[in-house]
Amino acid sequence: MAVKIRLARRGRKKAAQFDIVVADARAPRDGRFIEKLGTYDPNTNPASINFDADKAFDWIMKGAQPTDTVRAMLSYRGVLYRKHLQLGVIKGAIGQDVADQRYADWKEQKDAKIEGKRTTLGTAKEEARKAQLAAETKVKEARAEAIRQKQAVAAAPAATEADATEAPATEEAAS
Image (tube, rainbow, N blue to C red; front, side, top):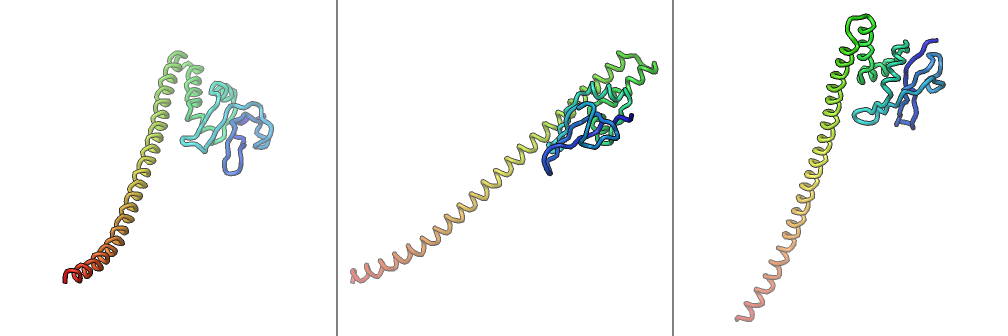
């Protein structure tokens, strides 16, 4: 029996979420599965990938074949690198303690990189919001100034008309 690690779709139309499952290769996409490893949500930025790495590693070591998308996720989270190191241990190329240390170092660097991206996206979003608010404030002030100028122009002819009507009256009174 060929076993695959693949995605099973769920969620509503145009807002898909996926379960990462271990299933028989002959089973339908959303059909029976052997075990659920986690979830994948491509709608967030960066995409949310939550799965049990130890279970995924066990299935990979047993010979389960991941699909292309799941292979990318496993690589992103270090499961395939861990498999690579474990195969080196089995062949005797490196020791288990060396493999564990290399994996821990890689994992630390990767987590820092992911957190840096998350922080960068958060600050960029905040800066974009502040820039939009400043642009809206500028437009609002420009509109208020235009209204003030219109009112001043409308008030100026009324004032000159009032002065013009008062001026002849005062001249007639003076004569």
